[in-house]
Length: 322
Image 1 (cartoon, rainbow, N blue to C red):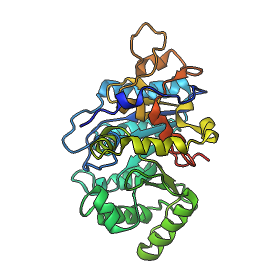
Image 2: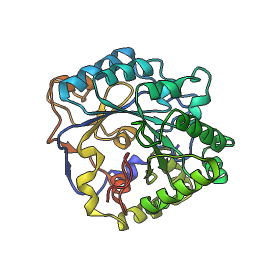
Image 3: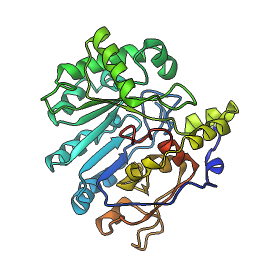
Image 4: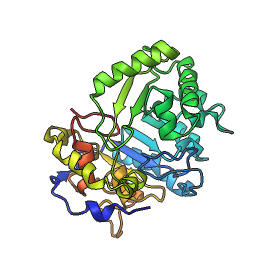
């Protein structure tokens, strides 16, 4: 796989500074039951990297010490981690919002038969990846049979109350373009999704998040192989929108990798661009440091991939920014 960091490090992206920390985003492990082309984590069934029990135990402590409001759990498929359920139930008991970034097909894997019920019982917000509302496009991007399983997963979540008003069970969907292009208008696309999924499958959901594909890991490597990397970067840069800068997720978030090391965002994590040291005597910032040090006002590490979050209407883990 082609390394993209050398192509991104020299940058003219504006300097950024972190504000008050409100969200802890943890990558609990790279194992996944899918291997998607757009995946910036390069996750898959054969990945063995999983967060240790010792590191997992630090998360509730850090949440309490820093007054964290949101725990955002990613992977891979986070549900595959043996400690996922204990972590979720512990943090929810603290009154903290928990987001599970779910690929939907995981709900039908062996050992996951009651995962949907577990998520509903603990009122976990589900952010589910569904790159299109048509079978052909989804299966082309994610593999044969993924669309049908995804629809079945959405129906199962709907049956538990997810996506319905008044239940408090939030179900959001994530859209990614099929290739090196910007996502369309999020509100219009959301209307299309709601119409198509409602009419054809009776599915309801709360919001659609439209995310740009990041020129890193598997997707970035594919761009390099096809000679499209610079063209895509030019697209992102020519659509830079400074109005998105105040809402960037890195301004209020810290990303944690499976070993407990800290990054300004999940994309920096996958590029190996760590958070600056936190003046605890440790050479590399670690989750344990957050028990003693607040990272607010710290300078955020930027590179050219940051244009992926600021092109057009912007793109973050919560969708469009403007």
